[in-house]
Image (cartoon, rainbow, N blue to C red; front, top):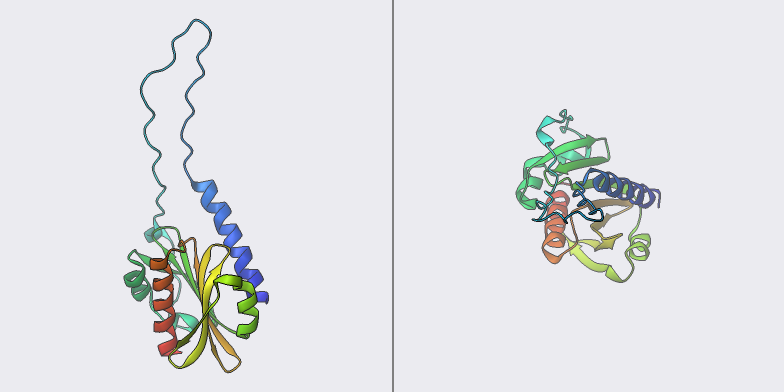
Length: 179
């Protein structure tokens, strides 16, 4: 359950940062009495880009980063990917779209996950292991159980359409094959 709270906190913080980084179009000046209203249109707001190439490298040779490489994540997600955080049980991949993929191995069970995912929870089998996929706070997730250990793949700011859910599932399948 601690993992779920941590994910919720990371998701909320990421949403706050993303909203703070978004560009806000300038407001048109209000005409004063006796003056003419401005003509023309304002240029469209551009989506901010995040230069992941300028971030420092993280050692991706150990822990959960061994389950799937940044190049594999990039190939599946269709954008650049870089390891942004690595520990013995967790690996975070920052995508060029400012989204993240978090792969974690922890001790937990699927019953709590089913409650957390609510009506979006779908039972699966990945490499003959029980799994659950669904959406939590608008973010896709896949959880795979092996004994008392659980592999978790979470998408943060990735969107939750069917194509993105399929990509998160593909990342989970790749990671489970090496777990």
